[in-house]
Figure 1 (cartoon, each protein chain N blue to C red):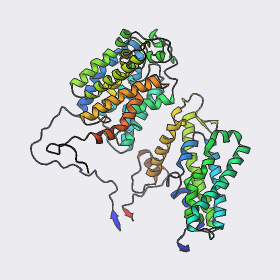
Figure 2 (figure 1 turned 90 degrees about the vertical axis):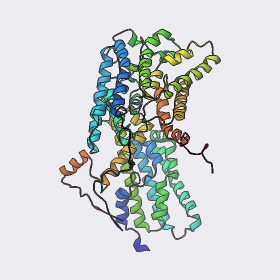
Figure 3 (figure 1 turned 135 degrees about the vertical axis):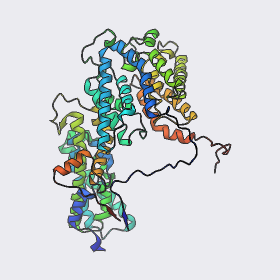
Figure 4 (figure 1 turned 135 degrees about the horizontal axis):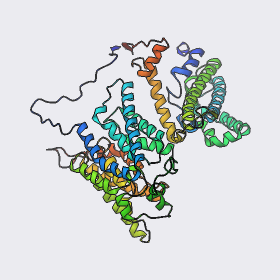
Length: 329
Length: 227
């Protein structure tokens, strides 16, 4: 049997839209959503610049440049037009930059951008096809490659703040417990984006109000951390690391609002989003309390990303006019 | 029937390239992932597998007329176990540190699918010469696969190749490639690369297309796929 195959087949039309009037909305384009995320990230970036000055700007700048450059390169290798103007690569770059510590050397940001776009996105087929959050793939790669990067003062510390241990590391070693007000405002060491809880809240609430991010995921994650942190609090009331510390420290708020809500790698249905957020929060507390890692948001997001197809399958909504309960055979 | 089986030359080259155990059959992946963090351990592993493959080829091809169909897998496993034990004791005697490093992975060659697959496909059906050719081809293909993965992981992950410095001391070692996740990443990426480069239907990706042109090897994009 011989079958003629075109050397470069054009993509088949998989979805035929029926005739009739359709509402066309310009407000839900990828570009508009990505612009919203960038606007929402502005307060976090401002807080990071206030604490870490030019180091923050440099880190985020290298990450964005690296993500854009590799997006173009990998698209060119696949013979596609690089969609740099939709802003998705820039958002990945900003989130990656904000999730790195200020002391990370330049090549960490560069390699992080390369793996975020290459392993996180291009390998799966580009924007909308990735099962993992690209920025977290890049961060996981560099964090596991260069574990010492956050610990040593690479360029020489500029302030008192940046030479301290991060609040979660200090709590892990039982040396010091941060003041809640300091955690809320952000005047402490840590990854760039996670220092200021109030900035994350402001930007995150903007995202949810604009419906760019689903409010169910951050709310479920925060409630879940409050629940599990509260259980820990009740079991060990003498521990100075309270549930409020769990909520305000580390990347929890940044991750819950900006990373977990990535529409590509989070569930589609509202019940699924509640499950996703709640399990995410549970994993964060689990990793923080019971493992050697001081912070668990990155691994929690990656693990939950992997479970998203299952969650989607569990929570298929009943169609309009369909059976009251899904029929069992 | 005998005419349909490949000759010794075909067996050898098939094992190296078109039926490469690592990149084509994807067999023996457990040791491939576990020992390719350095070139030295990968080569030790490849040497042990080569020894077991060739010895099994000689023995099985000689006793192939005695094999009972329902007992053949048992005989294969016992034969392989004998030679794996010899290989394991030899490595422990002469390469003690490497034996410590590889841990259980040398004894685990017993369950390496490459060897039992070759026993079933070739050694129990063909004579001594094709069997040895097949064993050497498969072992060579396995060595090439391990060496490719180990070189990538060691050069990027440690900046060295076989212990020699390649990228200099200032190279920031990509630790994750020398760790367990790096094995999966490297295997996946190299597998994709091999598939892409050997796919006659695909237009070569940008740097590779240019490279083919540079080497004067114009890729023919075949319009017809024969079934």
